[in-house]
Image 1 (cartoon, one colour):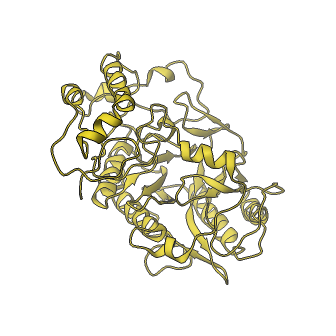
Image 2 (cartoon, one colour; image 1 turned 180 degrees about the horizontal axis):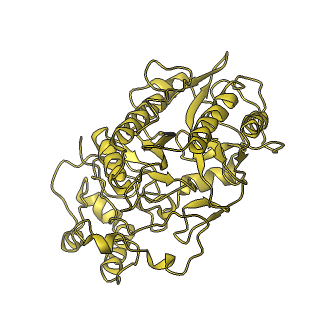
Image 3 (cartoon, rainbow, N blue to C red; image 1 turned 90 degrees about the horizontal axis):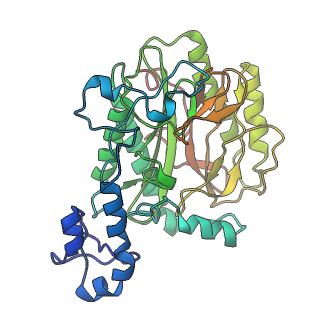
Length: 396
């Protein structure tokens, strides 16, 4: 693919080797479409130099280390965890340095933001109260929303095939990262509000937003892999699955199957005219029958040209979600189901959401389109328009 200009907001292709001299000295790979574009945007661009110099001078961060570091270093606790009060038995390790995305890949607005802020999402929150209706053109053009979701499915399938006893979640991150690049996609989680990795991997009591690290997956673990891809057309596709690794006990198997069934129960309601708040009741009833609980802190969301937007889709009973489904709405449903109580808190890494009681949690997610007669799973497996449980597909 053609190299894109490094000037903020410029999507022109680079046809020469016009590089910023200071960036070259700092080891940064930044090229520009023309001398005029470079000069015009230099005042903004030179901020990158200050950031790069600051990063190079930083001391050991206490959370990451090179992949060739000794095993005892890689498996040590991050600095934040040394005196942390954990609710369960899972412990984090260090993780690898952030992986690089080639400049040829289209990047969302937060990719190069120092704090990972999506300014387009912030503007959307301030200025819009309506749920976007996607047209057939936006869905079906070469790099449209349907394509982004298809790429997400392919990447998750690659990650799922790599998962097994003894593999590290950092290795799963590498697989996802490279699979995205191979498909000319940006891994949406990377630098989103400074999330350090290309995928979320949530193990056992981690509900969501787990950071891939050097810990090896153990026999009997349940592992959620949450993938989002951002394609050249500027659309996101989001999905996740929880996998049973090795010899998982019956309680764990029941939890994972219940979380699958909760998503299926919500999907059964999706059609024009359904109130978004109704989905939570269906999920609550299904979870309660299996003596499980529903996490209230995190919800499904609108998605497309923005990673997160309206509608909000709570998964719990008696919620106050606004809005009625219409054909052309695109959103995710992603119920997080706990074996114990629904309470959660966040680890000291500021990302990993875990159960308060240390018991396990499971989740499944799809991006879906509301149609005139029901819904379409945009992130479905090929030839599987309706979710179907298959032990083989979810066991590693």
